[in-house]
Image 1: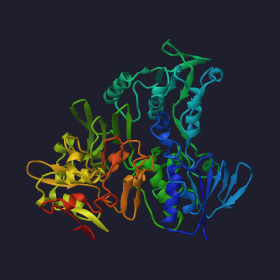
Image 2 (image 1 turned 60 degrees about the horizontal axis):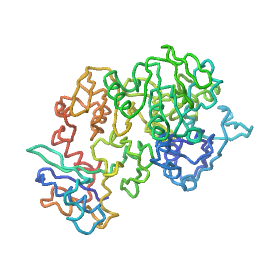
Image 3 (image 1 turned 90 degrees about the horizontal axis):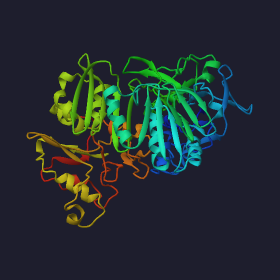
Image 4 (image 1 turned 180 degrees about the horizontal axis):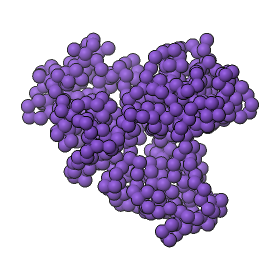
Length: 410
Length: 146
């Protein structure tokens, strides 16, 4: 009977467990979980603060998940090292666990730049884990002035989550626009206006030079008085454990499309891994939840002796703020076309006759059809793309394609 | 397993499937009370133009990408049917972003809803198919894609 060990207890770990069990129903699975929680949906921590979910509903899988899948979970334990030769994981308490197949699904951690005076700030938080969200919740009240450093997905979701519970929120970012990793200037400006209409204040293209207790001194010369500081600058992959074991690591643990690392019997998945990104044709850390699940699942199937490949990963995000939905996918390297209507903005990026990427703001119905055009590299000459840009529907395909899509098993 | 299949040549574009769907999932006994003068949120949608029309609902894919992509773990596949636990859904729309068929849409309360083949509601079989006047949608077993 095979012994499987998974370092981490997030989405990639669940994918891995379900992947293993799709092939091997009897092997022993041990999950090493630093966090003392049943697996929960990380991206839901902002919705938790907003009151749109609760601790029970935000469990990513039901209460019986581990028992049903025959998993032993070591809560509150952290893997410290891997010995790839003896196939052993060493835990923080010195305990050793043998494995036949190992999956590193250790996620990422917040990156905190070395700000001067940060140690003088008493109420400071990251916004990655459920414990972060619960500590933040304890600290805030209706009179809190909040400064969020980082106008990316994490910082802005945090802002939305607490907006109704605090006095005011200022968000600053070194970048000159919000959501700089997924939006261009014009799309970002549209979103920023919506966020400002909902009470958020921004200091963009600006950064903190010094903290002194409850004051942030900005590079622009401005100062921000705050009661609570949230640091959402960025994240770093937890890849050291594989590097120290002799594995190849770049910005994340390097994996192939089978989720194998450079070390035998060691796989990696999720935010700690750097896998193939089909939108750019090379490896990249794609720290998004669907990717974590699919890499984890691929790893699990292969660990159990099956044959699975995940070669069509692309960056994609669907995110909403105060009722405005934003979607993006693929790469923005191509000729841009644009559609504007009724407050909606859609931008498409086309190269070599295929759709490479898009940004959609305010009009997101059936957007998965666009995403599938990117993934499947559908030649745009084979569909009615002129129509697709205006209104996306299955009408853009030929009748023959539609017959396959809606007349057969898919 | 039995799924809903489309014969677009037969579709009249009458939208009856949408009304029957909304009624079957309303939990109400009287169709007029359930739908009259209300904005309906069906789980099947007629697409098309003035020449071609066809009804789109969940394909219950063999390997559903929505299940793998749902950030809340709200979508699952049970006995071949792709289902959503709406109490877990936070309305992030990631499933809309990934469904290649454009088959999912928001419900009336800001959470997602999708076709679950009417197996759990009072109809017991797809109401859209039952009420289709021209057999433009059928509920049957089919093998590989034609």
